[in-house]
Amino acid sequence: MKKLKVTVRRTRESDLFECWQMIARTMNDLFRRSGKKPFKFTATSADPTMMHFRKVDPEASYVALNAKGAIVGFTQALIRGNEWYLAYLFIDPQYQSTGVGKKLLKLAMDYGRKNGEITRWALSTFAYNPQALAIYSKMGMTPQIALLVMTREWKGEKKPASIKPKVRLTMQVVTTHKLINRLTKLDIKVRGTARPEEHFFWTGDEKHRLLAFYDDKTLVGYSVVATTSRIGPIAAAKPEYLSSILAMSVNYGLEIGQARQLVFVNGENVEVVQSLLQSGFHIEEATVVMASERFSDSSRYVPGHLAHY
Image (cartoon, rainbow, N blue to C red):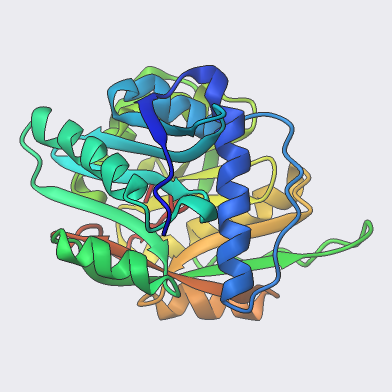
């Protein structure tokens, strides 16, 4: 393959929408090669979560530019406690297998090696991308958890029926730092590491709702519901609360006007998968979590999306 000239530099905030466009182009190329239907990219600005990640971890965000100055590669890594997580690594189809991806991945991993005592290296990727699975496995991050992408959508004003939770809980929108501190402690128990940065982002972003759940007066979990379609992450203090928190979160999404709903579900959590299937969700595709060590309790956790498990 002809060597294509690229330059690499730190990501600027003004780059992010072009990065978002390149990611959509790259994903659709993968979908076509895998026999899947491409999706229509309708965004008009950078994804708020992407902007948040760059703000918190600016030294782990890089772009690759071609000779004309167009972005042809993008990576973003996160450090939360002892965990390094690869949120994004996308290379334009014309520049794949040219060494650009390896260069960006090295920069992202160097950020982890230079900052803190990292014991867990992790990421999520598409299960039908064997090249990515092979590269990450060689770096010590092996496939561990199957994530099912489950969705449901409807047309017109007739909404799907609400899901009845097994356990009656009360719910409140999180607005205080004191409560966020309690959710952070719950994250440590369920995920193995804290992420207060994301909790503060969710409470401050108009497109997200951070919800806390109580059994009587006892805090038993939280969830994040986006105003668009995504539901999650969800963390529960005990396994018996998870399906009820998910049910109430799905119902809340209907209340705030979601016209499509998307949940990433650990394939090991049969109860949650069955509950969603019975409520009109279907399995759209499978993705996979890769990591250097096992983390999170699938009986108490539903992830947010591939960029932040």
